[in-house]
Amino acid sequence: MQLPPLKSVTVEVLVDNFFDVFEPSRPGVVERVVLGRLKKPLVAAHGLAFWITLHKDGEQGQILMDSANSPLPLLNNLEALEHNLDEVDALVLSHGHPDHYGGLQEVLKRRKKVLPLYLHKDCYYPKLLVTPRGRLGPWKLDREALLEAGVELHENTGPTLILDKALLTGTVEASTPYETPLPGPKRLVAGAEENDPFSDEQALVMQVAGRGLVIMAGCSHPGIVNMVKYAQKLTGINEVAAIIGGFHLTAGGPDLIRHTITGLQEINPQLIIAGHCTGFKALTQLALAFPDNFMVSCVGTKVMIGA
Ligand SMILES: [Fe+2]
Ligand SMILES: [Fe+2]
Image 1 (spheres, rainbow, N blue to C red):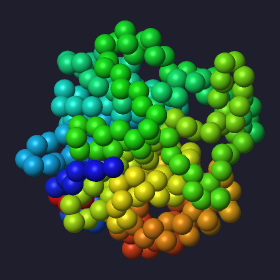
Image 2: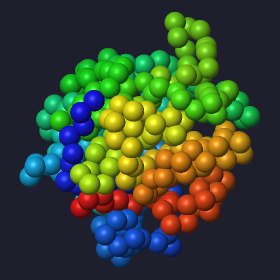
Image 3: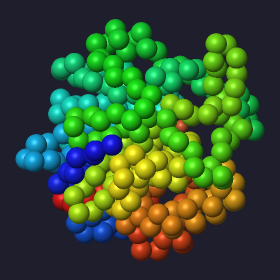
Image 4: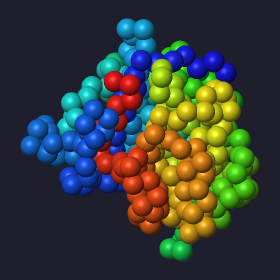
């Protein structure tokens, strides 16, 4: 699939699980917030939201990918980072988990124009989690409520180009033997519970001219290496400028962490920014394995590729 080259991509982490004022910056590439210059305090929460700005041929595109676990951190941090929802051109949902769509209805209530929302059609299956502390859920993304809110729904299953600037992969093709569905996450299909294959999760992929792919992942339930390899296959581009998002690794145990690190070393990305559901153990091991090109995603972190 032909993915148009962009001049630059800027990704700002609106909501993530982490905030650490001591995480270093990398001038011109990764900038952290300066506390004294914020309009109000930032809030970290178990959820994810990215403010993504794309530049191509003098045009700008603005994407809000995911909307955190609730309106509280999302609206607070939009204000703290001085972003306005009226600037958004498109909404993207990475997958159908509530820590990624929790603020969506509030975004739609506050927007001044009809917005396109891109999501996989399997996001509507009710989702559950079986954890050592019991069963959680089910949660269900309410399609009728989205339509009532006046959103323009774009439901895909396969690769889709959005704003003529970015690619949504559709269901991720599995290619690694070690990234297999975990036993905890479930979905309900026609009332029957099954292990969630995460057919609904997709990566958002951009190409920056002269740099390669920028690959954004919500929770990486299909496996971050699978997601990157599928993005490479779809676009025919092997260079990876940045991989950004939640990698959901610690929950998969030490073997998954080890194999994933080897897989990422083979991909050899210029930058890895991981947070959200990656888990502390996996973050520390990624930091050791990639001493020069791994950074923790924190609320307010700004990543600039080609800018
Ligand atoms: Fe998830
Ligand atoms: Fe998540």
